[in-house]
Length: 102
Image (cartoon, rainbow, N blue to C red):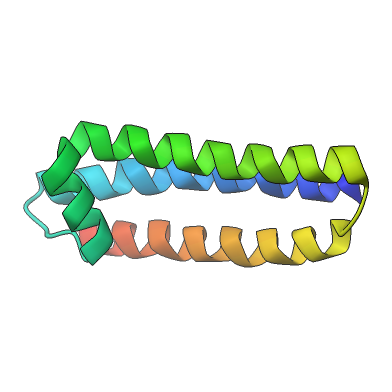
């Protein structure tokens, strides 16, 4: 059961990186960022700062889940369900970016 969670944690991290890459390509091609929070953060930290902040925060959140499950052995099924939804949402974002790019 924990192996499935670990797989989902890695998948979510990879999908986050793919979201950053596809978003960057879309922005370079002249498309606008659709997320108002991202727009605010980009205006405050710049595009590179936003990407680094996003990588840091997602890595921190995923590491917290990993640590909690490893330390307590509790709520593994709940975290698997949550990570399935998170990964599905990230996959949706990547696919939407690809649709815009192509």
